[in-house]
Length: 305
Image (cartoon, rainbow, N blue to C red; front, top):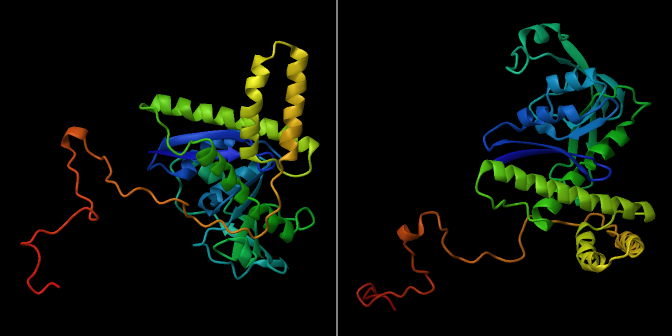
C-alpha cells in the first residue's frame, strides 16, 4: 500500500504535484516535498492534519497565505485580541521540541511566537459536514484583506478536492493500481495524473465558453465518442472543427447546482459473499457457504423441532 499526498489547483482542479511514500509514512512529511510547487502570493488550503507552527511560519516567510483548519488539541488563547464576531488574533508560541527536519541553527533563528488569526465559522447542517463549527487558522491578519466570512467560505470549498480525488479513484479507476513493482506503480500513477490533467484541460476550455463547471464523467463520454471520428479524419481542418465541436459539447454538459445534496458513504451494490484469496491457490481451502450447508441427522438435536 502507498501513501499519497497531492497538491491541486482549487479553481481548475488541475493536479499540480504528488508525493508518494510507504503506507506508514507521515502525510505531513510528504507534504513538505510539495512546497517547491508553491510560489509567493499563493494561498494554501488544507485540513487540520497539516496545521502546525512550523508550517505556518515557513509559508509566511515565503509570502504564502495559509488557510487551514485548526488542530483540535490546540486550545483557544484567552488573551487573544478580538477582531470581530468569531474572529480573533492569537499568539502561538514556538514548540519546545525541535523537529528532526529542522536544523538546530534554523530552529534557534526562528522567533519565539507568531501571530495567527483564528476564525470560527459555522456550516449549514444540511451541507454534509460532520462538524458544524469549524476553527480555521489563517495567516492573513488584516480583516480588510480577507474577511472572516471569506475565510470560512474558502475553507469549505476545500471539499472540492475530495471530489477531484473521487474522479481519479472512481471514474478513472485509480483506486487499485495493477502493476507489480514500486517503479511501475509510480509510472502507472503518473499516467493517471497525465490523463486526468488532459481531461481537466478540456474542461477548462469548456468552462471558458460556459458559465458553470463541466461534468468530468460527461467529458470522458464525449471524448470517447469523438476520438474515433477525429482519428479517422485525414484533414487538419476537419479535426480542428471536431475539436471545436467537442469543446462546445463539453460546455453544454454542466453540473447542475445541487445544494445540500446528501452523499452517504455507501455502495449501491453489495459485494458477493465469497472468501478472499489471501493464500496461494494450491493452499486455498474453501469454506462451504452457510446457505448451502445442511446439518446431518447426527447434528440435529432430539429436542429440535
